[in-house]
Image 1 (tube, rainbow, N blue to C red):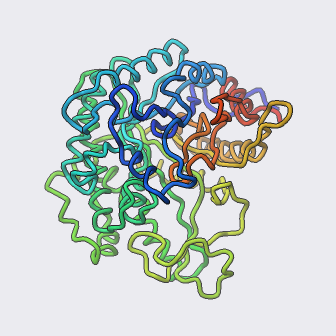
Image 2 (image 1 turned 90 degrees about the vertical axis):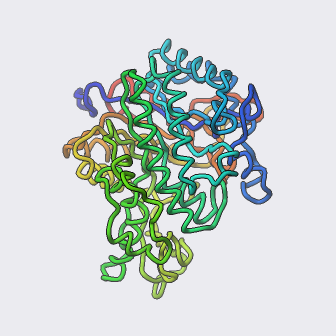
Length: 465
């Protein structure tokens, strides 16, 4: 093996989590209710009736978890802050006990030599704000700005790296279009308004963070998708363009260019007149980014119609994405899949990074989520031999290395996830962690993938297997 590092000097190695997925303690110390508390308590919404309590009980076990991070040689930890812990009503009175928790977490990370990377919004909107209209309501973007200001004033003397919003596509379209995520609505016009107000909230929050005067770098985590036409036909290419518009460009163009794509506005004209876009909004959404977070898991292939296709390969029902024609479908390529049913194709990672490097004008990129769920078991030797996950990580990190060699300014990588956790509508049935969690005992066990990743993080070189 070469003695040269596979990754550049100073490349940042981290792992990521989200508040609702790991913290538990959903009623502790004045925390208010979120849309995910409500959604999880609604029969039939979450597999097995699972809720966010106790999750990984990270709220009480954070010191143990930071010690694990140090053992894994992590240089950074990406966590999210629970808005309902800070402002139980979504606005108004600040809950100091909630801020105190994140102050303790940040101090513990810094004592361990680990950079705190904070995400302000990973989907747990305070329920009172949803009751007042949620993200489809413009006011929510301004309440988000106020929340960002409170958090940045409290933590900004120690937290430099901020992500405002995690995956606005999920919040807008899974939450308000197909209802798979909280708050579980089915209103396409509302979903488009939510998408815009999430981006508006991002820009307002970025300004609020910077206004504190603390040194800061501000970005957001965007789940850019690789959309490929299933076949060579012009119809499939047209479907791929449409899907790319509502999956990617409806977010990246307002963020990076200060415009909405004309073809997307035309494609969606029957759903919305986009009158929710006010003067100067797009100058706010395109507030300059210090970096862009990239979340990538799996590519997507689309076809104009299921006609002539093997029915076993058609994975999406008609109208599979917002604004889709009823005939348009997602199509499997017959590749190996994770426990989520997501196809494994590291070339998508390379494509995503190259595309965003070109579109974002050379700003720093970080992979802020990448990982996979598999059915893990603790064997008799007390270990978790998750070879499939290890293969996934190595394949995708080799694609990231190729992207760096092609000139992509990729500065770091965060594995998703540090811990097995509450996987949204799948409850506790899907395990993404590089650390196994026994939900009955809360015992943490580092998986083989975690040991491998820790060696990579320590050396910058792919370890022997």
